[in-house]
Image (tube, rainbow, N blue to C red; front, side, top):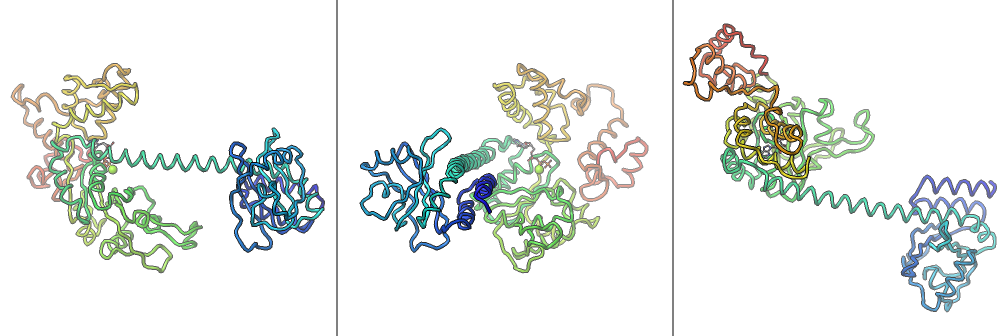
Amino acid sequence: MCEDRLLEDVWREFCCEMDVVRSLPHLLERLAAFAPADRLVLRSFDRTTCVFDTVAVAERTLLADALPSRSVCLPEAAALLHDWFRRGEPATWDATASDPLRSSVVPTGLSGPVVVAPLADPDGRPVGAVCLQPALVESGRLLRRLLEPLSVALVNSGRLEASNRLREAAEADKRAALARLQRQDISDSIVGAQTGLRDVMERVEQVAPTDATVLILGETGSGKEVVARAIHARSRQARGPFLRVNCGAIPSELVDSELFGHERGSFTGAIATRKGWFERADGGTLFLDEVGELPLAAQVRLLRVLQDGSFERVGGEQVRTVNVRLVAATHRDMYEQIEGGYFREDLWYRIGVFPIVLPPLRARVGDIPALAAHFAANAGIRLHGFPLVPSAEDLCMLQDYAWPGNVRELASVVERATILGGGRRLAVKEALGVFAPRRTSEERSPASGPLDLDAAVRRQIEEALRRARGCIEGPRGAAALLGVNPHTLRSRMRKLGIDWTAFR
Ligand SMILES: Nc1ncnc2c1ncn2[C@@H]1O[C@H](COP(=O)(O)OP(=O)(O)OP(=O)(O)O)[C@@H](O)[C@H]1O
Ligand SMILES: [Mg+2]
């Protein structure tokens, strides 16, 4: 192989691998093919502090002792150093103990003769030095050809290190900000904790310090995750992670490996060993959202974790144990799920040890003003730079609506009202727009107009269907809510032309 080819290879190597700790041993191997080369040391030079730092060491024969990483330039060597950098040529330095230049540039552990070359950036500013042993004429000649790629590699590695440091700092900031935000979320922003959610928060306070599994039941958008985080924040695991996994969003064939992890090669696509959610949540809380969607096979495994805290990764033999607080949530009617054979009864008894039922927003209308004010302040600041305040008329309109999407829907209506109002006011009427108020004036003051019995019955049935999410039978079905026989309810619905599927 000719020397030009060597140079080409070295450039390619440094382009592909920016970390010189990894690329320097390859360079040494290539050099050794041309001339004896046992040891290569790359050092950076800080012009402001006059300090050399060892950045990378490559060795074919190991030194007895590790090289010191730092050497401060001796004052008496300053002029010599300046001169040496200016010449820009490799030089062979013998092992003269009293040489101040050598003591400054070469790490002390590197005894015996050594070829040393200065490295400079494209503008000619000193950036470091490279030391090569053994010190032979041909090694010095070869090293001269490699000074440019070595300088570039040293500068790039400095940049890489700086950007890694920045990234680590940014990640640490992000983690700290997230932790602050979570704490803020939990402590400051459970609107209604003293009013509509008072009972819920009492249950939270009771159960949080225990290790009991909690099941949060509530309609979509009613704040199940908010409550799960509140439990975590008040639990013994508060300093550990809070991880949420949406059981309904994982493809059924991957549920096992997502929850419990897998060993490399355990199935097609398992190219590496992977920890599951349970292992990742060790020492913290795992929030199993939409637990009612878990496939039956995964329910069996979950039951085992709940019973003895142990599991195996998919394709693994080792039994693992974790210390995880489990909080689950669902918007489904679990009795219906069990009756239908979609959810194991034994798992239900384990998971439903301590249920917390979140009331829908329409059952805590008194919280709507505070929630609306909270969301209007946030949306106003976020979108236009200052908080907005809902008027009495806005609040009337918001309290008149039935909120099938609960608090989440209220948050998005207020956000829409903020955008439509151009930052000056809340355009609540326009934001509610197509969604006509579900509570009619008749509902609020039934005595104010002529009463139509069919219309009143229809409203009652529709409200019950809405609460039961279209389910007629069962302990939480519309028939039970209305206190009538399911057959009676069905025939009344047929007569009034009510379609239960619309409430599903
Ligand atoms: N009491 C509350 N105070 C302040 N914000 C709330 C409250 N309840 C809910 N929210 C907000 O409403 C939104 C929906 O809440 P969350 O995600 O907890 O609902 P969910 O019941 O988990 O909904 P889904 O069933 O769709 O998963 C979130 O943005 C949350 O911050
Ligand atoms: Mg949720």
